[in-house]
Length: 91
Image 1: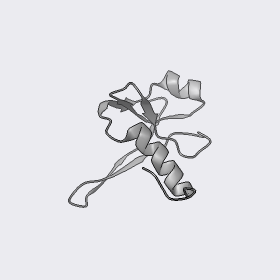
Image 2: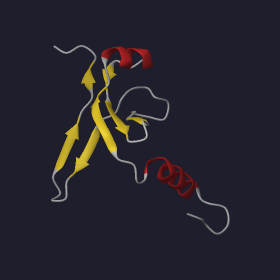
Image 3: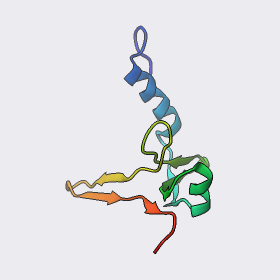
Image 4: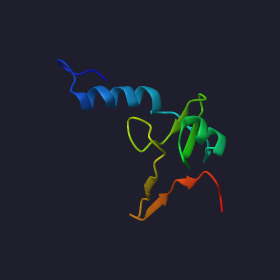
């Protein structure tokens, strides 16, 4: 994807996201382990996606990685589904 002139910030990040994600297939889905969360410095466990090229995608609550984030899924009929964060210790 080429843009005339200097790309905007949105165009720049869209190009980067497309290069890393577009056309990839999700091979595996699951919540990170308690150990992984602790290694990252999180107090909750977030969702992880593994792509077909062995890239791992973690959902973070902000750019600084201060914790995991929830996913909002909207199905084709307009139904909304939340995939939440989970505590590091299940009770």
